[in-house]
Image (cartoon, rainbow, N blue to C red; front, side, top):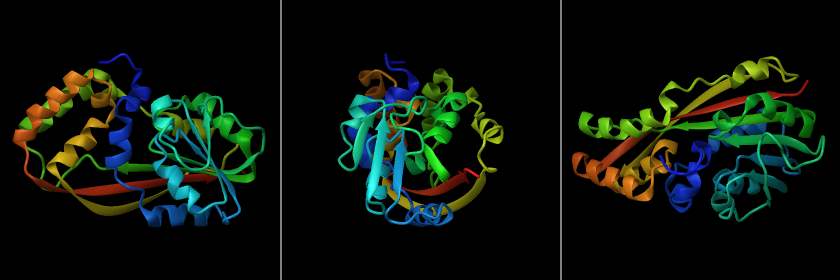
Amino acid sequence: MGDRPLPLAFGSVAEIYDRVRPPYFRPLLDRAQEVLELGSGACVLDLGAGSGRLTRELAARFDSVIAVEPDDEMRGLIDVGTVLCGSAEKIPRTDASVDAVFVGEAFHWFDAERAVPELERVLRPRGGVALFSNLWWDTEPPLPDAALELLRVPFVASGRAEAVETWPDVFARSAFEPLRHEEFVWQLPVTADRLLEMYATTSSIASLPEHERDALLEQVRPLIAERYTLPIKVELTWTRLP
């Protein structure tokens, strides 16, 4: 593994991440805005904003958008809203100052025991939280076993294969209403080169030293087809303060 902690590995591939990761599904964003009852005048926070992919979508919907991101390289790509250095465990905002907090593909990296109280602190009464995930690893047709085995090696070595997400339990003990979940499905056609770049932006591969990352993808490239379709499952988890 490289020198970066795994949650901050994405900065080493920030430009690629911003360019190739799947876009946020518009019906998902519509639904989150609806259930959290947010008008265009709302002040919203994009927490763990990364390169600003979700921030840009929020800026098209809301007058006031704040992006909070700890990684310098990722944060440097955010080109809309108010951009702040900070983390979920110590949000650089005053008490009761935002109407909603959005988190795109990042909450599993947070220390939930510290982050959930911070969400309670910065949200106004009846403030809401919307958590998004894009599950896109699977392909149609499936990748050959030899390619999958090569890609799995850094995943196992990183420890992500044994990771257990406990944040739903933390929410259950908090002041928030019970978590609610909805799923959406859509398909994204990709070339082999884009698919490999997407894999390069996963934490376990992004955390590799650059020469190891390049060598891995060079090994995988001749094993795969020229085009694939990704059946992307999008998950929305949301809740509000009582």
